[in-house]
Image (cartoon, rainbow, N blue to C red; front, side):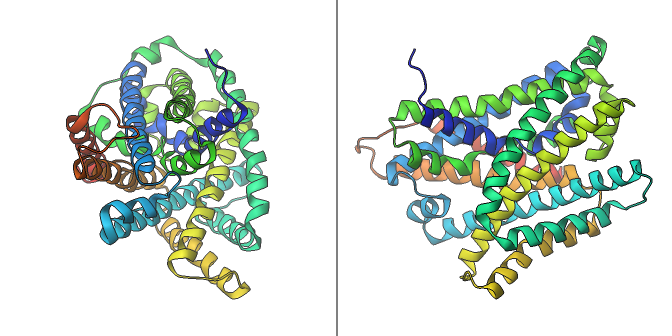
Length: 391
């Protein structure tokens, strides 16, 4: 077996790092009531869908020009209309994620202040954090990228510590309990799919590695399997540490942390650190991506005035939504999942189908197995994810 090179290991870490983040926090709350075994099955199905759609992006990217981003791919294959859909979906995805992160941070800040004897609402916590984040994003990108790398490794350390600290509290009876309900399964799909949202990194990985298809495919599968392993361990200790009914009744990050800590101050500190770092690393990554996208769409320059305006465009709409609708962490993640389904399922399926039928005699660099039936099945899954919020 060939040992992966440092570049391949780096690419795998990018895929895994892009996926692991705040979406992980919502998993126990949306599938906890199902019980461990059904939750694991659903998680495996969604992981398979995420990998399949990522490999479709790999296929499309290699056929039209390695390293082209989402907008370029959509414009090249689907025309101006496809580009508009891609850009609009990306903006809505990042908007929904920022709402979720601001809401989650507001809850954690309020909880921390309460433990110190200070009363603070979740809305006030979200507002204070947004103001601080505005200043950081306005100052510059390079510093954030460097700091975010350190924060990501700190998050991994906190996550591993939290997971293994929760293992002694796992009750086998809790793992075996739960009820499989169709409504819960359908409602959980957008949040689950959001947790595997690494697709935007695929074009960059292709460009960075400049490697044969088999290596690119291996990086995609292994890189996405690492978050899967973390998620399965996370729901194992979460479901085993409390009752499925208790998890289902939660809708906020602070309530999840408090319940899993079970009165242990040390464990609550570790869980709070993990939750904060997961939110923080994801938040700045999404905020920077939103900044770059809005600057490109609105043709903003790197002057002080334009940076101030663009940064305001990044933070003001999600902050208003977080202040008007507090306690909507799970709902915001679900809306993000609907937008991600458009970007990571519908668009890749449409582009792959069109390219495959444009010139059937053309020699293909790579084609994902499954043919048209697999494309249709993926689209049907995507429709369920998009409509899950309205069922």
